Image (cartoon, rainbow, N blue to C red; front, side, top):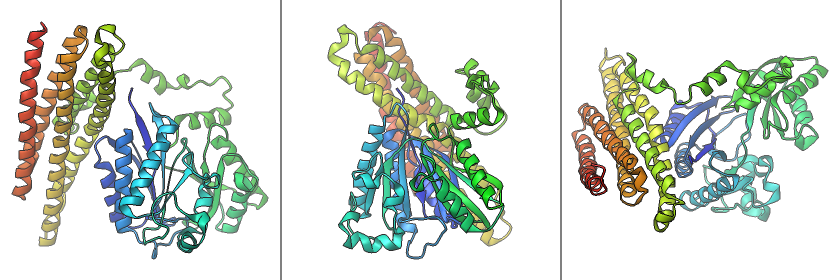
Length: 503
């Protein structure tokens, strides 16, 4: 079963794009992670990044984001409309697929300990991961913000962090936890009077007598009064109910709703619920939506293949290599699954169950590489389009092209390394797995070999564009090591297939 965790870290920087770019790049560089969304607001001076990945990949990506933010963001000079207490203010893990809330709590605890130990940053656990009832609510943890907590953490035993030191540096403190999916939703009013937004926020938030599962603040953003909301359980308090209460409260003060906005992503069901309520579609079912019906009818469609066959340069060979590797990993998982539970293979059942987990993790990594390879190549194309009329522009273009070519080499190299791990597993299931699925194990190995060969071609062509020949040589040396080991695995796999009667 595929395991997928969502992580939505909030960083206290919404104005310096170069800082946000660095943080986002470090997160996206982790194999097995897909960056889904990035929202920055200069008035809040805050950025929300949404990504998904396997549990281990999500943990590593969150750590890298926190580390980079701690190096680049100084809370002593930070100012913004949104409450904050750290360079990385809050990091929630959210179960999406094949992962429980308990798994996400464990991730929060592991990340918290690592951040405290390695980065020397105080960490508080919140929501489902909270170790103290009062810390379940983020507002309680963040009380006093950076400036107040800087004093309280050293003097008040009740503010002792769960991990890390009881003192704060310029990166502040970080709150890490586990929670269900929430909807971050802002309502702009037809006024610039922030006191009205604050009164409305007080009326609707649960903590001060409002709707259950609603957190709200009144802020001034872009010259407009804003009611900023987090709906922590949209299945219990839906979006439309919160919006309508804001509308009714606003009428008391002679104002209305000018517009609303989402921060980050919203579950599809939350939109369906709102559409059903506003349109009074009492018989509405999700499969009445055309796109939903088409998706169901075309499961396993050829969307990627159509894109691959198009005249566009991406996706290309690197993406195809990653896709082949992902298919190989899926076949390995299948062979392992049909081996587990068979009396004849009881002695290898435990190892086969472990291989299922390993193969699914490798598949998720390769699936994310399909998109990452296309993005890397597009970056090369963008660099080639930069102006070169002046010496300064030429220098800037050359640096951008060098970085782009390096990334475009490293992404397929990582895919080749991952495919090598898949090939090793294919060899193992061919040797120990269910004999009835031997041809599937052989097919997995063949696809993994192809993925390595195709990814290697992309490494070589992009490495040619590097002016740093030492870096190019290093890339090619690492690729050669992968290819040499793949050749050994291929030879052994073919021997096994012959021995077991498939060749």
